[in-house]
Structure formats: C-alpha cells, structure tokens
Image (cartoon, rainbow over all chains, first blue to last red; front, side, top):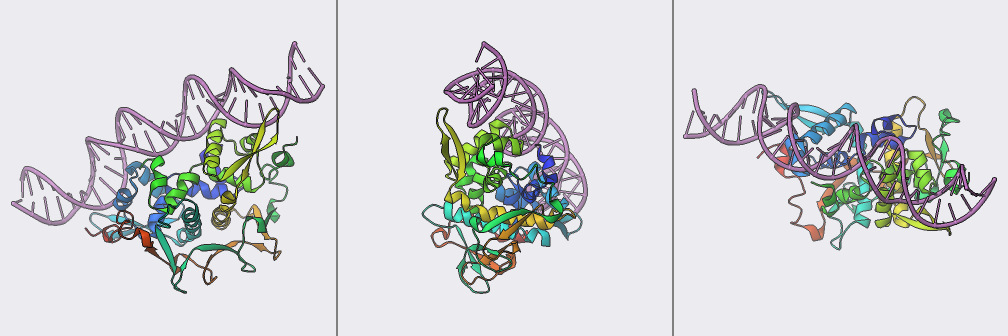
Length: 167
Length: 167
DNA sequence: CACCATAAGTTCTTTTTTGGAACTAACAAA
DNA sequence: TTTGTTAGTTCCAAAAAAGAACTTATGGTG
C-alpha cells in the first residue's frame, strides 16, 4: 500500500493517519496546542527542516486542521492557528502524552502536568463511554460493521485465517 | 532533530512518537487490537513490505508493547500479542478512530462501530478528567511544568517570542 | 545609499527510509 | 521428489528527509 492511498481505506484509523500519521505532524500540532503559531517558531523549536515544515503546514491547512491568519500586511505575514477541527485532535495528543507519561518517563516523572481548570486538580485523561459515561479499556469494547458498510468490509475485517492461522 | 533522538526529548508526546509515530506502527497495532497475530497476516492485510514489517515488529517487541508467543514447535513459529503496555495504547487508537469517524468519513458513516459491552450501546470515546470525571476539551486544560522538571524545560516550553512573535 | 535583519519560503545535494521483488531456512504434506 | 507454509533476509531502485545555501519583500541603521 502506498501512503497516498491511505485516506481512501475503509478504516477511520488509516484515514486519520493519512493526515497526522507522519513523523512530524503530531509534533507540529503539539506546538500549536502550546500556543506556537509562526513558521520560524516551529522551525526553531522542532529542528525540522524548512522544506518539510512547509509541506506539513500546507497539508494541515488543506485538511482544515490549521488555518492561516494574517497578523501584519506589507510584507504579508500569516500565522497558523488551530481550527475547530484541529482542536478536536486534543484527545489524540492527550492520550499519546498520557501513555508516554506512564511508560516512557524517567524517574523525574512527567515533564508537563495537566490541570483541569474546572476542578483545579492535576489530572490525566480517561477514556469514557459517550452513552453511559463509564471509563473503558480495550476489553470493554466490541466492534461491528457500520450499517451502510455491511458486506463491504470483507477485505478489512480479519478473517478466521488471520486470527487463528487456519486456512 | 533526528528520529533516534526523539525518545530522549523532555516531552512525553515526542517519546511516545519515537515508538508509535511512524507510518506503519499504528496500523500494525490496529490489527493487533482486531485480533491479528501472525507475520503473514499482517503482511497480507497491510500491504506492508516484509522488511519494514520485520523492523516494526522488532521495535514493538523491544519496547514491550508486543511479545512473542510460540504457537507451535518444529518448526518454531511465534505470534505477536499485545502486552498490558500495548493494550494501554487503546485510548490512542480510539481517539484517532473517533476523529476519523467524525472528520474523514464519507456519507456512509463510520465503517466500524463500537459497542460498549457493559451498557450495550453504540458509543464513541469521550476524554474525561481522572479526578472529577467531567468530559474535557482542549480549553479546559492548563499545562504546568512537573515538580522535578522546574527550570529544566526552558528549551521546551514556548517562550513569549514563540507565541507573540516578539523578540 | 549601502548594508544588515526578519519572516517565510524555495532550491540543491546528500543521506536515510521505503517499495518491490527475489532468495533462504526449517520443516510438513502429497 | 516436488510443492507449500511461515518468517524472515538480501538486493536494488524510488521516495522522503536532512542540511545548507539562496530568494523575495520589506524595514531599519549609519
């Protein structure tokens, strides 16, 4: 599979990764959530090459995750800001950070801690059911094929052969 | 910044991406969560080259996210299974899928739907505060430097210059 | 005016990473 | 003996990223 075909796969994970699944994009978005907005600030902070940064910012704008907003004219200068769609990637960043805090930290603990403004406590994110509110783990979820996709995911859902090794 | 230096950054996102942040790893993990366990099943399903698949599986095993478990001897055959550490990446997958369901779906809706076994409803994940349980969005969170990192993240936290453009 | 600085790129060359296909080892079955 | 299965490895070509220099438009300094 080539990378450009990824956003046409019948899988929301693959489609999302087509947008944010490369080496740099999520690091750029992390900086966006920290308030960074300008080309040279991203460049300085990330140590990314200008060529790749240009490409990734263009891609994020083309997908509507960032938008350009002029902050001066003559010469025209624009900054990159998170759209609503981009802000909704916050759970992705939070879950990655939370896993890293738990599994990739040294003995100094998490470099950055998160405070829930409403309750004032230091928190980490939990993943909950939108319907009953309960906290969920991998084992609490069962997957099914969406109504309009029935019979069309034979290629995607793992067959018994894929799972059990039988032919 | 070179990719190998990423897991030494003072940022849990960067450290996590050092493990799962490449083109293929999260797709491999998606298949693991769907029950796929064997080399040739990953290869068939993903259309990944064997070379890259070997490399990624090795990396995932070395980080303790997958472990090898023999399912036959003579000839020795091993399958790859999610460890506890790997299972804890479920929120990452779920948040990526959920974003894709909302923003990258065509008019047929989500290809795969998720049922919460406990309550029986079709659900999507929400991100909640571990302390008060409330659902959170990007704007509900404030970040601070962890106690043992105070004064050591000057390089990391965006300076006023990065945010406002001032020098 | 000549010269330096700034922001946001673009262009060029080298290195690294993938893609694609063929080859290998250790058996098992026909 | 030939063919098949599983899990790789090897090799070469193509694509992507790193690194550094160049560009454009403009503003400020001496």
